[in-house]
Length: 243
Length: 246
Image 1: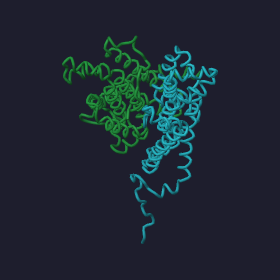
Image 2: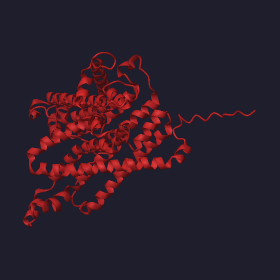
Image 3: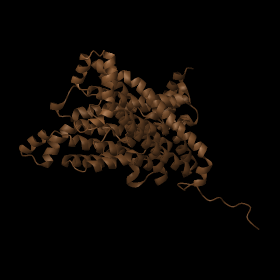
């Protein structure tokens, strides 16, 4: 008599059980999309908040200390704690995930934008003023473009950091690829774990490369002037990270 | 009863002051997890970073090794180390680390920033200062201790502070696997849908993280040579290498 039940192969400890991946492509795709959405939104809101803060800090130097202190304290608070503090207010929603993710980008972005703006050569600013640029036009057309390498370096750090942090939002029911990792941990089934980790690493690398490419496109003069000025590129941390 | 009333009741109830999951006990665990892993990582990372920075070679190697360690997000690192060593109470010489998988993850997170910052801090000391030291007849050991390290303090300390922030946060996450610490309240609170418990946990973790930062700011001020001090201890870091200089 043939056995009625053939015990399934023990697939839990396997690092990659390919049939599972094939059966769950849609779920994996959604997790990846969610991960990207959370990252893009957090960095976007971060920029929307950080840019005015940085401009104000450059204009009114006295503000810079307090701005860095406040964003520094936010940066110090562990992400899980911030999620916990928001949970009673906003529940298990995307908002609860986005507020801390955005908050963490602020220190990096503000500091890099200010560093970039401080690095604009004073004679270039004087030339702009002499040409009749108004203050706002000068910031928009002269200061910000020249600060772009430092700003994009900040965006790179913020983006890669955020990609790592999004995983933690799995604990509050969000999480993108982190939800796959968490699932793998809870079910002692390693395949989703591997998929989540590999994809989030790949996402970090691709996002970083895309931003480097964007910087090249946005600062054509940096390449043209390379032979004349032996200026080091603004160091961008890779891969940077936040708890 | 208002929500904050619930939080207050939670924090003041006797369960939170006696027994296995009392605030003092979890605080002790959280602090111990953090201090043990940061110290272990510092013992490994700081001498290597300082020596490489002193001889100004191998920087790319130091920084790249550090980078490989940094590529993995904390959450992934924690789960991976659970897969590697499993969950269980450590024994023998490992007892002080409380949770081996958490310790591995925290150690791996703490080494890179300390290594990279120590290297860059030492390598960036002004050449003229180094030459004056040599001109005064100092040997390598004297130069490191009396000239280079005092000048590298802001960056070395920035590395230690960044590492500590990362470790306090990961110690919170570690409650997910098997360790104690204030993360217990958050993870358990989420599991049973007890928002007051979750909030209280978040509050305690946030306060602890800020306390660590304040203590380290004070330490930085104390170890800074009086001639190089600015004002009082500063919460904001003057310098920080998020980035290895490549």
